[in-house]
Image (cartoon, rainbow, N blue to C red; front, side):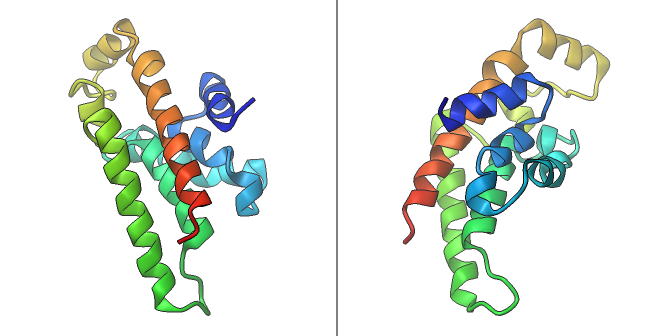
Length: 149
């Protein structure tokens, strides 16, 4: 099973998009499964269901930060490098899906509004669109993690 399939398995088992993406990189990033799922939990639904930045993208950004980010005793160049990788992530995801904004990605429907949430469910957007966003974020992240420059 590849990482995208594993991420979709998490997603299909009621983990949010951010959790599903970050969790598949846990071993490479030195996290336990539980740590990855917990730290990414608040980022689902575009940051706590606020529908800001897509959770799949924020889960991917967390993976980039853990891999490349600046720690306490690191050079500032690591921060810049991480920002550059993050810009590529956002650009690639946008090329594939038109936006990184959760609400836009879900036809401008508000998942916290009862009627809009019902429309999201009725249209199958969590299954059709969000699953694609999770898989896309994993695939872009894999490429960015392999390219160590």
